[in-house]
Image (tube, rainbow, N blue to C red):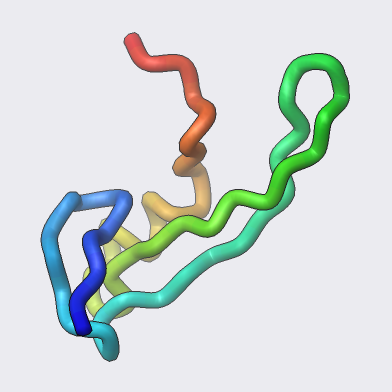
Length: 59
């Protein structure tokens, strides 16, 4: 089984992907749980997962 990293966008094997779950509050006060997949063997992905949001405003 493989997964795509939300940070670097690479497709990696299951044992190289971890998931960070965090609660984000949307406008209007609606809490949602985000599940962020990241490469557990790449420092840039581990660090990037801490600030990544699926709901971030794209520039």
